[in-house]
Image 1 (cartoon, rainbow, N blue to C red):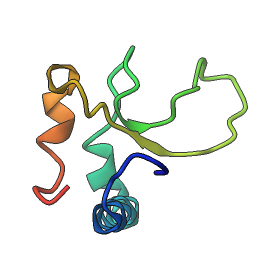
Image 2: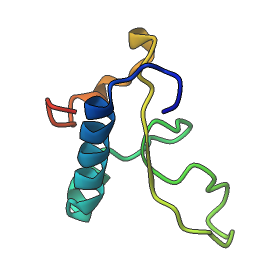
Image 3: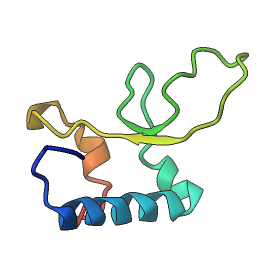
Length: 82
């Protein structure tokens, strides 16, 4: 984050949380899976068909603001410190 006035310690904590998420067992990550037709959660955004060749890149996509757009099923599964 550049020129957003986010404190360095917050950025470092977020990186630690994300690294912890991706280091967790697959079954735990899978509990935050994207639902069909939505990109928020854990998964791959650009999977358009079961037949396509994938350039594999798992991601955790989160909407943070505005709060009313957050998906409760995703946020409730994250650690409180996240």
